[in-house]
Amino acid sequence: MEQIKIPARVDCLDALLDFVDGRMSDAGIDVRQQSKVLVAAEEIFINIASYAYHPGEGNVVVRAKVETERFVIEFRDCGKPFNPLEAKVPDLNVAARDRLIGGLGIYMVKKLMDGMFYDYLCGKNVLTIIKNK
Image (cartoon, rainbow, N blue to C red; front, side, top):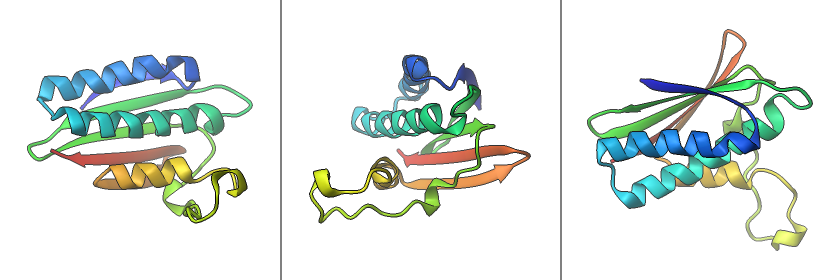
């Protein structure tokens, strides 16, 4: 897996997206699939940057790997433990202005990706997303 270590700050989003986009382009992944992966990667990174270390700061290690039939991205941070797979599904029948804040981004990632896994290992959040080619 290739990897990048970047500060978990919103202003570092472009570095993350350039890294992920570069790996997918090198692998010849379909442009429509690339768009879905980039949206998911952005959502995950923004959540980490906004909440994992608040009010402090920390880093995110992002690893990417192209396999025969899929593209895998792993996010690792040492922030507060948080399993996004346990996030409540937002009520999409409620108007956006009346909906509780939170959960919509994770819901979107789950819908865009073909797999999403979480583990807490050695004091680190490890979130893996998978997109089939």
